[in-house]
Amino acid sequence: MRILLVDDEVKLTDALSFMLKKEGWAVDTASDGLSGYDHAESGIYDVIVLDVMLPYKDGFSMLKELRENEINTPIIMLTAKSSVEDKIKGLDLGADDYLPKPFSTEELLARIRALSRRKDTELTNTQDIKVRDLILMPNECLVKIKNEEIKLKFKEMQIIEMLMNNFNRTVTREMLLDKVWGYDKDVDVNNIEAHVCFLRKKINFKEANLKLETVRGIGYCLKDK
Image (cartoon, rainbow, N blue to C red):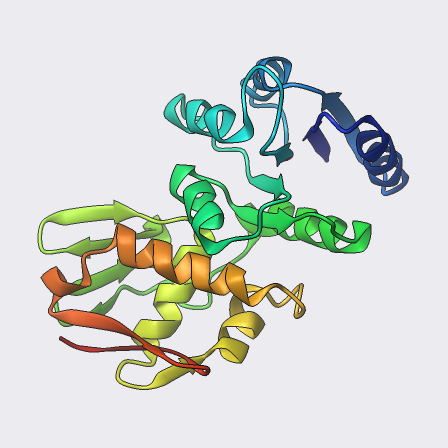
């Protein structure tokens, strides 16, 4: 597996590079957004670890350009900012995961392994699922509302699949952790909230005659509008 690490903190980059190489992975590094982009646009990497605050081109700008140019390499964003709004921005631009600083090396390694397995992960349900006017097409990783098709990332697909399979029943955060973040049971709850907020932004549930309700302190429920 080949990893690109883009961060301007030299000590952190050196330490992470050492640990990643100990895992047997090839590692390239870049200390600014411009050189990071030059590496990333090659499309040769299995996972990119990308800091938000970078010289010359920040991580969000780099992420946006990569996705616009159809570079779909899984990307983990690193940031000192842990607010839901910042996470939503990263997800909106196409990030696959988000890890706030400071973090444990073991957690980062687990997240990298999980993303690297993503393409080979078999879905538990390959049949289309229909609830009211919302259709989930797992094989194509998209949802359809009437004539509109909305492409999903794998985690988004897993979340909406769980909600649709539990229509009118509450899906707890623990259930989502087990299904979507099974590799990391200690994931920040903000990560779940950010993904659900982004799904609300991405999918017009009202058009599907549905609403995605937050059950305070427990989880989420997909129900009739």
